[in-house]
Image (cartoon, rainbow, N blue to C red; front, side):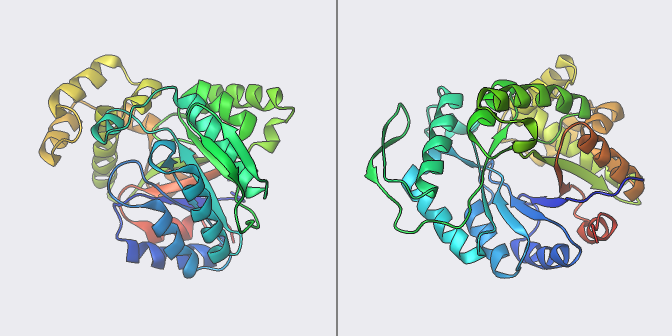
Length: 330
């Protein structure tokens, strides 16, 4: 079986932050190459989390997966990452994206022209990180004669993208694309076409655009537990994050029924359990690496073979240590 040479971890708020710090130390010892912290809802701030991880590690890269253009002033964001760059000695990665609906409207954000907004942010952030004095009057970014007081060593910018048009645009301006989870390896193959097209428009090759990917891994020797946890996760995202549901390849009738039962975002755990009953095993298996360790490993390899450069394992069942040891790159 092929051996991975790059593998990372992805956390949301499902695992206590102090436990994440323990897993980060173990992951670094086992040769993992990065750890990313999610920030898609209201569970945990990603910048504080990766700062904490950076203080207990020495080599592993740390990234936000992803924060949003709409919620942080660009100069404040750039200053945050020069600080993280200093703290981590050049290991911080800025993952950024466009907020999803209905989350955006619920927090007072008008989500319009997300591709343009992300493009403006990435373009000007790269100028700021390079030490330039920047003046820019865009539709979303306005900077007038600003230069960062500290030039970072290295802050690569990754765009969290699910839609193909966002990928094509991001491949023209960003260092990498952070591919989403709860999609199939077949989705990856189509995504690569758009990333390659975008890279070519900026005079780059596909190999110059890094492509780490969140992959939901529902491992357990208790297969009933593995499938149950995976099914709940799939149900939650089909119900609440339509940008993922739109590209997941799931029958619209299933998505509609899930949304009817859950009643929108936020919902209750009881409604999620009820809605999960309409999500069949074949859907779970198409979107999640589910089962015992060898099965999960083989499924992760499929995503790599379909274009992902670094799988970022999201431990769905919370059984983290067995995953770390089995996916060790040492």
